[in-house]
Image 1 (cartoon, rainbow, N blue to C red):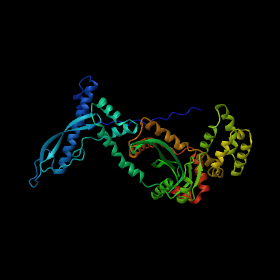
Image 2 (cartoon, rainbow, N blue to C red):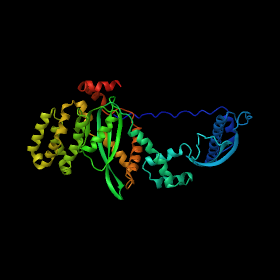
Image 3 (cartoon, rainbow, N blue to C red):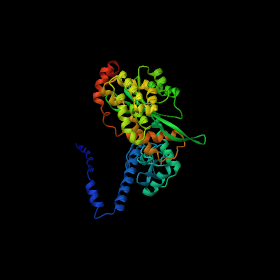
Image 4 (cartoon, rainbow, N blue to C red):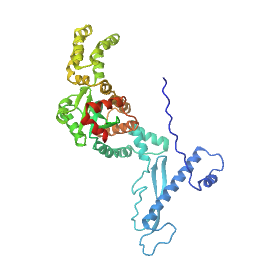
Length: 421
């Protein structure tokens, strides 16, 4: 059945202020070129900014422009000073009003500021889509005839780190029914050497099915010590309980999870095990091998799954590919929790695809970078990419409603209070 196209909401209707129509009749007396329209718009922006600044000065002094200065007031207007500011459609020369006492500090364009609202956002938006500093510099010059230095662009994007730090330390939900953990690799310069480092992400699913990136951490090697730091960080930020942690065999996680969240079930990604298993076979053998593995992960219980694994090991495929049996047995402690759950919960936790698809989108954005100069530079771009991606998340996680009812039965005391929040 074809999917029904979703209707996009109509943009709000622009309402002209009273008297604007008469002004337009005076300005638009015939056909206009695009350049002429742009010139008029820039003139309007200049006039509007200067009028707003005059209003700020009037509020500061306590009397309006054109009115007589109150006798008891020592301060008064003292002309204007010219200033060029960078706007989202190019440089704009404006006249900043002054007061005689030098006490006036405008808010719209502060002292020493050279950029107007919107210009920084445009630079950050381009940076978040993977454009390098040099590419942004060339784009601004070509589109807006605005020449800025690479250092200037770096300063604008550096301001993002304040937001990153706030995000990384923000309070979390007390309970997350499911948290997916995964990593992607990036190249970062360290001590004059480019090293491959892992960026670890945690994707939490709230009780209502909505998703949230809990944090990102950069580390060269993983292990129990690293994961202990991650879990303690989550706990300090208010996450008291995780019902199920789903991962692809990340080293040291089991030990650290036991220390910080001892009641959490650690579940390995079944799909990863299957992919790794099929990687041992040629293309023509993969369908047969996949069919032979189905009885293991589709078993109704852990005992039935173990029997199916033994049957696989003794059968034709197990004899041809003994390494597959060994890989399943190595991960068996994190596989068997899967079989204790009903089908509704299994559909949610059998794969880390939810976080892998997120990582895939991040990789598209960072792939144009050969390497990052620092951990901070990598964190900044990845966080901006995540912010753009998660802004699109409007619906609960797929298959969540049936699973939610099962969570309420399986984890009554731990799950139901989370639903009430």
